[in-house]
Amino acid sequence: MKLSVLLLCALVAVQAALLAAPSAQAKGLQVGYYNKKCRKGVDVEGVIMWHIKRAIKKNPRVGAALVRLVFHDCFVRGCDGSVLLEKSAQNPHPEREAPANIGLAAFDVLEEIKADLERKCRGVVSCSDILVYAARDATKILSRGHIDYKVPGGRLDGMYSSAYEAQAELPDSTFTAQQLINNFARKNFDAEEMVILSGAHSIGMAHCSSFRGRLTAPSGEINRDYRNLLNYKCHQSANPAVVNNVRDEDYKTVARFMPGFKSRVRKIRDLFDNSYYHNNRARIVSFNSDWQLMTHKDTVEHVHEYAENATLWNEDFAESMVKLSKLPMPPGSKGGIRKKCSIVSHPLY
Ligand code: HEM
Image (cartoon, rainbow, N blue to C red):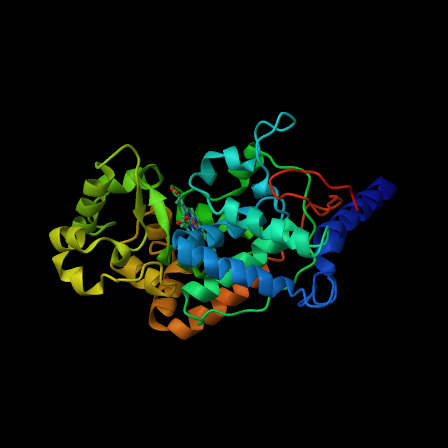
């Protein structure tokens, strides 16, 4: 009896150590990882920034898409580029097919960067690293340089991608505050970090199906004029996408439904700042999951904190993005460097 208890304790200890130990990949990550990995004159991070600047100039929607994409990659099997894999005969249901991944975009931009880097430095730069750097660069550009962080490289691309897994791991916009807290806790993010990262909803767009319940929510939960605006937008076509931040809305619609808000409408869309917290306090956020942050004692204080301190949010968002970008692949996973981001083509390392 004593021996079996001892054995059990030893087994639990080994398992705990395995879970606690960062995978070899997360341990090997380094700031400036690619500095000496390619021939002289090839600045990998510089090449990525060049492409991202150009892509956002051509299509401003790309920036928000990249910020969301890195979250959806890293929360499922760690940051391994698994969200980038396309459906194939071998894998008919990759992550991209999951309902939680509705609206993901900017895959073409990453594929372009990958092709360029393959020409300049063959077989060296992983798609997962390209995504992490691209999201960092998009954040810097959209925040006008206010959110600027160094992030390590050295990730490998994974082999697996499952829609089922993505659906099980990613938070849903209908979640309660407690469900959101539990979901982030599984990745070792506390309630404050969840509030910090949710600030990314100051940019980008969402399909009406992602906030259907808000269209009839009581006025205690959503500003009545904003709800009318959303209802109007959502009835323009079948499941259109609407901007997350009302200040990005077109002037005429705001003048019609929220005239008191007209002066806040911006010429330049997707300015990345702490306005999400102001919007949340004013009950003008689209998802139920956003509004939920006002309802829980562990989250509401942080909504107020970040509404009142823009600089603190810039710094804390940067820190949380670095932490997000370090989420490792499941223990024992094998990876490699893909030739194309959408297809598994690499030998194992
Ligand atoms: C807290 C839990 C979260 C939930 C429930 C959630 C849910 C969603 C949903 C439903 C959409 C709209 C999808 C669509 O209908 O097209 C969306 C958009 C977006 N999310 Fe989240 N999200 C969460 C956290 C995050 C985090 C942590 C980030 C990044 C750090 C993020 C960044 C974005 C961005 C930038 C968009 C706009 C994307 C675009 O315009 O292409 N979200 N989110």
